[in-house]
Length: 332
Image (cartoon, rainbow, N blue to C red; front, side):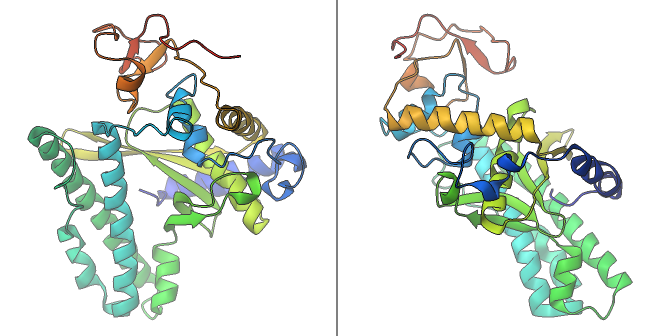
């Protein structure tokens, strides 16, 4: 999922990167200026990047419930499916690298067995048997797709450089790091952040999604770009949201490469301050007009019978319920 096509690679090198340099980034919005405004946080309430970037809850009440009231989220099908599909990809890439390091240039027969790698267990997953069956099918499709891609990339690298050592082979064929752990402490964020993938060669931050595209998804790549700049003091100007879907029995991948520009950086910092304020001052923001039916806090915010059946919202048209008057008043 995280390896660009030849066309995308050309677009990055000849289009997006030069455009990012032409536009320029305000120095005050670079992550390495974490010790001064606007990067220096006003409040002390460490949050994860996705807690700031997730705007499915328009009023940010989900953050209040999780961080202030310590309400336990109810696992939904969308959340469980997304987590397990992420695991499938991360495990395959990690195992592919391990096999290259162990077997070197003779790794191809071993890599072919990746298509048989066991899936994450569904034993303790709170899903129906029908939902589990659909999830297994999707994991099968994703594993087959990603395993083929990994074999092809290593095979192509070996065809061009048959004497490459294991480390060089990994660097050329599999140049991404998955589930990278970062500390966002300099920016007032959690010390235990996890990025889906990073290409350190091109300094591109990847975030994978299994669902409809939303504009605010770019906030996550922006947050991780700022964290990387704060830690390594090198520019991170490109992000990519990878969308995975399943249609007609096959995997469909779309990659949204974008410049992590001034507007996105300012947007992320504004969201950070607002959500940190809610937590630090323990403010209940009340309910939004629309709530996604996939929200893990929907039952907490709207007990049974309060969601208008069949009603659809505007911003997430396929999965929103239009709600009545908030049960909890908005605080000043």
